[in-house]
Length: 264
Image (cartoon, rainbow, N blue to C red; front, side, top):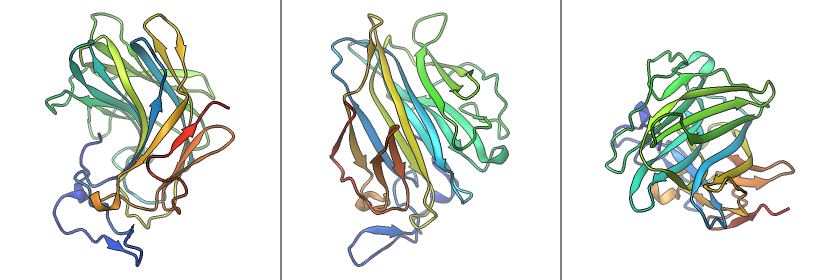
């Protein structure tokens, strides 16, 4: 869901495969120039969702000047129509001070970028979706998508620094719909497959139903952008004492299609 990164354009990509046929080196060859991997929530919800949240912590920050994007995503709807989807997350983005940024943006079903309110946060490159935000490694941040005050169909993206308990509303998106569905957390990495390993942890995944009931996913479905589609085959996930970790440049220990049980 992230916008294309400049060096992803063109057909001249230096992807190389090892003897196993896996894509372990070179630029990602996907359409947007990223290697992506996802954790789709497995919910037993019998009611519409009106809020989703997740806690993100950067454990090992990137070591290269490339875009890394870690986000919580959800789709919008009104019970009969799809209203598109949006993602909120932290970025390692060389266009911003100290490469630190936060993004809250998305796309309508037509592919058009969703309109929204002006953000109170500055943006060095004047990007309406991506704003300067000085996150720090080893510090948990709660990402939340919820209804915005005012007319229906507007959705608020908020990030809370849990160490200081400081909440920041990024802005409101004018997506339409009255409910959320299909929550997922993901990493999009615009670095070469062999660039130094980095990792983030996801925890505190929860949703709120229309009744106000708190809903927790029972598990997560693991998926990777396959090497045949341009993804790096050396990304993986792991379960630790606090949550689920997504790792780049590491031997794949959990296969695509596996489910991680969160009922512990």
